Image (cartoon, chains in turn cyan, brown):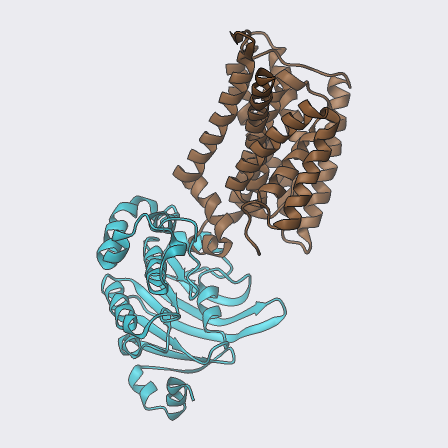
Length: 234
Length: 290
């Protein structure tokens, strides 16, 4: 579904990603691991059109989408869910969700997606009128994921969903990602604090110093001593 | 004495309402794109001149037609000015300063064009509604009532637009979190241009409303630019609610100072209040730090 070939990304003159290649098949959950600050988020953002300076090739369903801006990509069904959530603080939950369905392709599905999202996150349904800025960390995280789902995406890039989350909510996040995937959405997720998510993985990539240092199945990953180091954060 | 004070309050309310309409526009541009539009006052005059032109055409010379035609003209004008002059600068370093320079240039160009086309003499517009409401010594002109109704109507319409339309919501989204707006796929460039266009309509409408009372002159917009700027800074940069309160405070202050000390003191009083406020609360009445 998404094929990334020799991707290089830069922030000003800083070379963040070096010849990154990866492959996400339709309906898969692909997990990306690696130390903090080594460019995992940048991979997701580059695919979703949120990094200005990228070279290489990003192919989505056979179409070269390298260099397209997020407004075009969201419309094609590629959506990024940010680690720091990036909600609209002075808007209600409902308004945040409606803006999630901003793109042309999502508009006709706004109502059904709203229902889906409320079934998935009943707590958000109870708090439709609440301002995003007054929500707890966990609720805001759920809202960020829900807003991403409103875009009617086929491909979701989810960036560290466990960030700022209480440990007891991690199971919940894993359950939701599984549910999203069951509904047919392809997921590329950066997450290493939730073992349950790693268990969902069809494929695992490890990114170190802007380069892919490992790719393989989760069984292969577990058999790799170097990776255990990263899993354990040592 | 009592009647006089009532008159002063009414005059403050009416001017305050038009200031509110215009200052909210300036606050909006600042809140959304962090750009400062120096030509804002010239857009005020543009509204007046467009209305003046329309009134000179037979069959067009009533306010209903004039407002219905002037609004889209101002909207399109504002949209293209943003696309042509402001948008290309946005990708450069120090673009905020460059936007100030280019809009300052635009203001001088427009003001001189008005002088060439319409001459330096003052122009006036007919009253929206002739006649007065009288009750004993108390007199209220229908024109003032109409100005008030149209300004408040304009602000309410604007509020409705922000809260209930997709474009309005995307404007708020960009103001609150540009990164979030980009993530959900809102085209930022379009929002910037739309915001600029809407603010042009708001100040242009203010120009049409006030032209019945204060005339249109080629350089008349500078006074408005200063006031709108004072109100924006006073209310808190980018805070629409703050701008609304500030506009009415400024309107009242102007009316009372003008009545008690004379009109020459009003600007001095405005800046005194602004400086005192900013000394105590640098973020303005409702602004946020950072």
